[in-house]
Image (cartoon, rainbow, N blue to C red; front, side, top):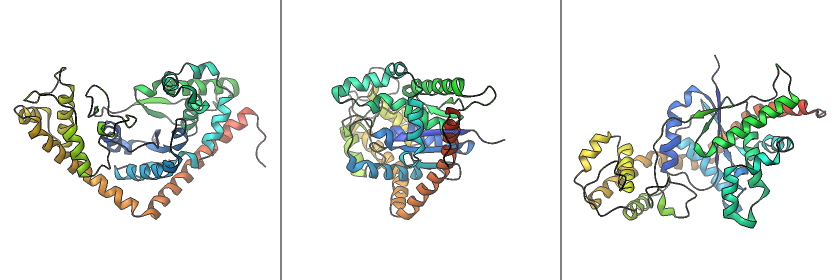
Length: 336
């Protein structure tokens, strides 16, 4: 029996942080052998909001190296750059002409980001979900890992696929496969270093709110030393009045590979001056293998280029087959 195919993309903006790694990537690495994985670096999505063209290519390259350094295995996974597969853009246009405008106008993320951007909001931001639908549908994905903020986008993808199949497919020959959500395995919920009630995020304007996977030891030490805490001595889990305390203890528990009870006992009489150096040490040690592997990959650009070249060849083979099937169903003259 063939493995189910999983499709997932990540925007090429900013560095991956501990929240990305502990909340999703590390868990996915552990179960990747169960699926046929296609992971892409979403550089087309990255330009739907204001960005710096001078860093776009480097961000894409660095992210590919980080995925490999974190343990993505090419035996089970195909990685590629979104913009290198032109079928993504072409299918998006075809789906644009089938998707009702009011479906996009009701998307929550568009409303939220449009308010922030004001008059600078682009058509690309409105159309972002159709591009996402094209990303998924091109690869006949069985499953798509989703978090809370992406559920509405996957529902739209399913609605678009159903609409295409109803309008252009045959009863026993649907044009597009309807993807199912894959609820991610429970990962760590890592919160901001500056506000224990908010998730760690690369969109937070403050670099002090997160620990990036590539932060050097001195930067990690500075961020943990300055992170938000409280004046209470004795560190405990699960106190709703002390969210930062719970977050930092949880982070220590995961990185030190200890049980909750072991950490609770170890830290119950500690002050922050005693605990923060412990957390710093275990964080630096945990990230060192990833950083070393990342540097090894970046020092061998030929290898990384070959991985991306091979990945795009595999991706194009699948994507172009789907695109041809859609164009045939829509009545286009085949290319001669």
